[in-house]
Structure formats: structure tokens, C-alpha cells
Length: 301
Ligand code: PBE
Image (tube, rainbow, N blue to C red; front, side, top):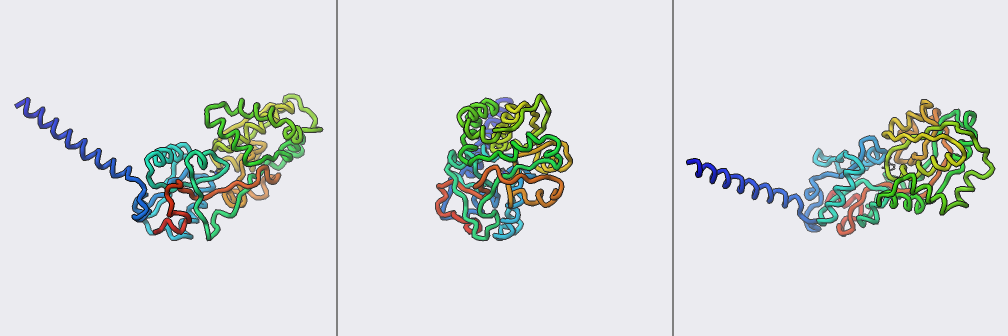
């Protein structure tokens, strides 16, 4: 009797494993260009942090392109979770649609292509602005001047992001970058009076792009004698930290589209020092093996 029971359990667990395995393997089906994409991806766009500007824009885009009928959803997660899902999908040639942006290593690493956006919901291109608290020019004119001058190129930012993604410490990576780009760094600091241990606080969101820019600017301010604190937080508190003078500045404002809502909400409570990087981009993207998906309009098919 006992033996029979054991056999039964063994049989049941084997059957269960087979069912489980086949259920999983149907989930890892490869991208099939002849089948409706929506169905293959469970009508789900893989997103990032709830507060990210890109999530708001994507919700707008889904409405504009008719990806609404209760089936479609934008999945909230985190940038790290999104890139790891992306890595798995790409490895197995599965279909996936993600909220993407550049500068970011995900584009090259996973051979992504941005989907065309004929309704121009994401805007043609984005710039990254430096935003400081209103009293900074008076309180810390040296830092204000440096932050006002700070500007660099997407390739330069991507270079640091890649190194950090490969395991280098952000502080070390940015110090090295400063040594290799001394002329440019000099142009941000030349003629600015050194301070002696005055403190300054920069806030940022821990996206790779912002980790790179914020660490770089922090080091440059240190070279001017500042005692710099950098603090990571979510996007809404980031804007609030500047508006309420809890922090001195940030270099993470993707505009005019991506963080446009926050810009509008806090208008009048910050100083916009203009662009520090031109030619960023935000939009939906798919791996290049999804050959017949080229526009957001193709998602519905
Ligand atoms: N991002 C990366 C940000 C800005 C930097 C596109 C995820 C966003 O606000 O959505």
C-alpha cells in the first residue's frame, strides 16, 4: 500500500512537471511574424519605474495609437527589471516591446530599434537640462557658474554609462573621464574662484545616464573645493527637492516632453539653466529581429 502511494505521488509529480514545463515553453515561444503581435506579448508593453516621465508619455501614446481596449497594458517595473527581461527575451528571440531611450547601452547591447512615431507623441528629440534652486546664483555663485557652463555630448555620456555597466565604480569612471577630457572640463571651471569646503547637494534618479552625469558634475564641483553630497531618489521627489530648496541642483531634466509635466507643475520654483546635453531620445523599441514591426502603428496588428 505504502509503495503504491509512493508510486502515485511520483506519477502525479511527474505529470505536474510535464504540464508545468509545457506551460513555460509556450511562454518562451519565439517571435512569430505571421501571428498578431498583441497576442504574442500578452498585450503588454514592458515599462520602467512608475514615476518616470517616459511612462506618462507612453500612456499618452497608447491612447493616441488605440492600444487601449482593456487588453493593452503598460507594465510598471524598474529599469533594472526591464533590461533583465529584455536580455532574456533577446536571448530566446521572443517578442517584446519596451520603453527605451538613448543615451543608453541597451540600444547596442540588445540591437534595439526605435519604433516610428508618426503622431509625434514622444517628440522628435529631447534635451537634458540643468535645473537649480532659485537662490543658487546668490548663495553659491561659483557652483552656479560651473553648472551653467556644464554641457557634453551623448557619446560622451554613453561612454561613462558603458563603463559603469561593465562594473566600474561611477566615481572612478568619471574621474578617469575628466583626465581624458581635461580641456572640456577646464572650459567649465576656468576662472571660477575656488571655495573652501562649502557644501552643496545634488539630487538625481539612479538611471544610468543620470548616475554618469551627476557623478561627473559632483567631481568637477569637488575640484572647485566643494563638499558635494549626491542623493538618489524618484523623479517626483527630485523635482520637489529643487523647488523646495532641499537640494541645490540636478542635471537630469529630460525636456520638453519626457518630464514636461513636472516642469509645468513646478514652474516658477526653479531656475532652468538650459541644456547640458542635446539629442537624447525617448520612445518605444523592439529587438531588430522583429522585422515587420517598425512603427507604433504596427503594434495593433
Ligand atoms: N528616462 C531616462 C527618464 C529620463 C532618463 C527616459 C527613463 C524619464 O524621465 O523617463
